[in-house]
Length: 201
Image 1 (cartoon, rainbow, N blue to C red):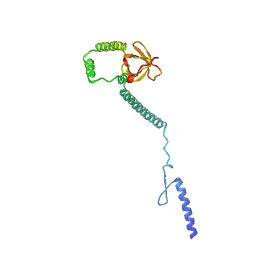
Image 2 (image 1 turned 30 degrees about the vertical axis):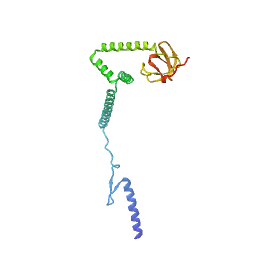
Image 3 (image 1 turned 135 degrees about the horizontal axis):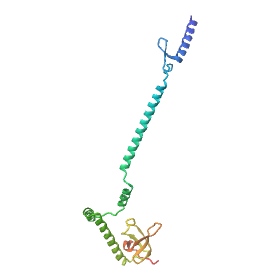
């Protein structure tokens, strides 16, 4: 009888393995079909075409949405970015020397109360005035070749730089400030550093 029990167990185990391959085993030992064993109904050509069209439409809608979002991001980025010429103007503004309170007040009055052509005319007159006085002051500057100097006016890129006069002329001079090329300035734009004595070239 014991042998029969073992045989029954082996048969039962074999049935369970077979049932596991074809479906799930219920608690009572019966098998239930799984989704793997259920065959899909075959689609007709019309249904296949409709499914393909639906997928294509969904893909197109997603693509269109992505393109719209991309264009919106580009437009927002472009709106927040200043135009190239405006960026150049702002960069040039940052290089301007600072104005005193009084000078800023006068500047504000001029820019607010005068037309564009008059502002341009005033700027031209100021530029000429500055050049004329630089020329006059340069005649008596006493700068000589070999002097160690500091640039105190003129081109704002060089104001505050120190260097050595490599060639002194009547009203202008060449100054080496460590760049590859000497700069050409009015001698009135220079002052000797700590009263350094000039040297003869």
